[in-house]
Image (cartoon, rainbow, N blue to C red; front, side, top):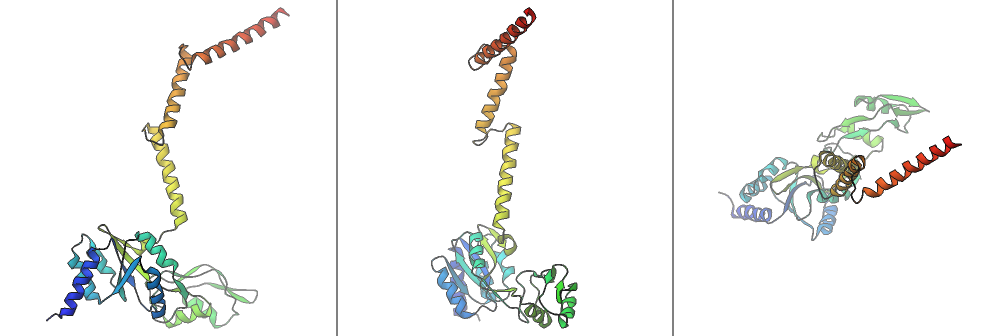
Length: 281
């Protein structure tokens, strides 16, 4: 028989899900308690974090009845918790990501992103480090008495479990590939689930693509004759100039054309006068 406390827990979580604009899943794996308390203080008034058992969280998602919300169930891995907020999903991800701090890798840790040993000098003398690097596919050489990595080398993919050997290598290289903080795995908003891979965007690259897309759209609208608020002034100017050109060629005596016709006639007359004078001389 299901305990009444578990029933209440599911009902309460379901109500929180239904009353929130944005519902996310964060992984609390190896999250230090002091830092968690600090993050909760920072999020006060912006978001709420609620931990529970995976089974109860899954049932709460189902009970909420929201369209597409069940898609969050597949992200209930590690030590998950709900995060409820009114923030834009992308801003929420950026906020949580910017509050992470680097940490050394330990055996059993799960890589939150690809771990890459960069090309260049390791600053270490030849020795066991060469074999350790080669064990994970890194090509090495010796430069100025120090071991150097020939090319950037991926030693672990996102989601891989860190082995003792890899942890020792990364620590020897002085790398801190892990991050301590709330790891936002996925977010639900308005019937759509956004995984971390979508939420993680390069702002500069995104801005450049938006500017390029805007330029392409403007040119397409202009060249196809599709009138918009942005293209209207240029299209009207273009139409006026084309109409004026036709008027000049046809000798149409209309305002906006007659001035140019008179100026052209005057220029032709002056040229003719100069030619006559030259022949007279």
